[in-house]
Image (cartoon, rainbow, N blue to C red; front, side):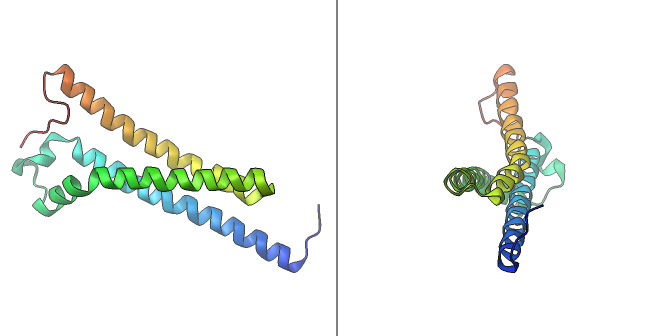
Length: 134
């Protein structure tokens, strides 16, 4: 096992914590996006019969696509930064960052998959592409 100086150990610890925090942040953002997608694609959510508050419907309506795009762009930048750092400096923390970004990317793909599946279902049922009752 290689021996590291105290400053190197501190740097490695900080890099590991940063990679973990980055992964946790994106997991939380993707959980919010997945929750919004589940609400958005539930027909009862858009009617008064569903019992959902109007403020929540308006929040989902106004922030869904901008939030989805923002998460995609920020995750993409983080992924590019980790890839660049890994190849430029051979940083193990960058590799850990990439591994930590795998679950958020999987969650993002599930979110987009649900969105696309619902739109295909709408088209099959002769409804407009982004149709919701209400």
